[in-house]
Structure formats: structure tokens, C-alpha cells
Picture 1: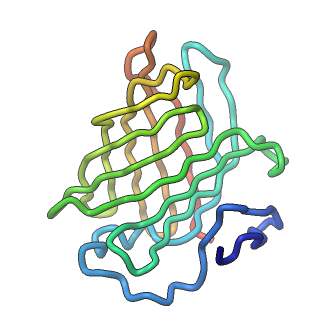
Picture 2: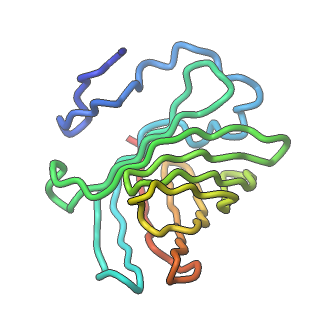
Picture 3: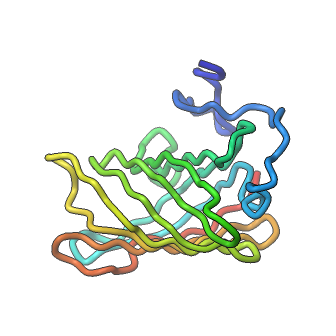
Length: 178
């Protein structure tokens, strides 16, 4: 597995990290997503009616390997301690026609999510069309996320619905391209 034990920018290990030099030409279908490509780091905050408010630091990566999708890896940790993980997501963005995109995500909460939406002028807006949960998975019903890139700044808002809470803001963050 390429780069299986590569060290991250802050020295942390990324055992699933396969980000390497972009040696492949970007396919034409992916050009509307090119603004996302790179490594982004920053901080955010969140909360939910069933939990306390929280702050986090984050690294998000978008890259491609010459195929018709963009790979995605996100991880968060307690501010000031990159070894104290909070959350992680892995997935793929796929073009779905002019101005349309699909986001396929796996979560360690015991669920997988399919989101569909739009991509326009540096903005993604995505809504869950299906969530599958393992028997012990968290009671997530769906998500809405808005990701916006302005130059070298990526900001997002994530809303989440569960069995007991309707779609509600869960987290926001501002990241800088590194």
C-alpha cells in the first residue's frame, strides 16, 4: 500500500493515507471539483441537543488518482493534542452530471451515507439520500452539508438528523489550504 506509514504535516501518522504526488491528469468530469483538491487544516466548533458543545482541530484532504472520483479523508482531534482523536470520515466525491455531485461516506459511528447535491462556483451543497447503519451504529438519519471554498479558505456547515432530533446544526469549521 503506497505511503502506508507516511507522516502528516504535524508528524502524526496516517495509516490509511494514500495521498501522494498528483501524477495523474485530472479528468474533465472532475474539473468542477478541482477547487477542493489539497490538504486543509483549521479549527471548528459544534454541538447538538443531545451533547455538550465542543471545539476541535481538523485536517481534511481531497485528492485524485486519475479515476473519475475525488477521494476524501477527514479527521478531527482535541485542540492542541493531535493524538487525541475525536472523529474521522472517509469517502469519495463523484460527478453526477453538469452541476451535480454524489458524496459517498463511511463513518466509524457504524454508518455509511450517500449524499447528493450541487457544485457551483466553489460551493457544494449536499443532502443525504440514504443512510445505512450497523446494528450497533449511532441513530443517524441524515445530513446536510455546505462546503465553500474562497481562495485558500474552506468553510463548512454540517447539519445532522437522528432518530430523536430533526436536522440541526452540528458543526462548523474554517480551514486553510496547507
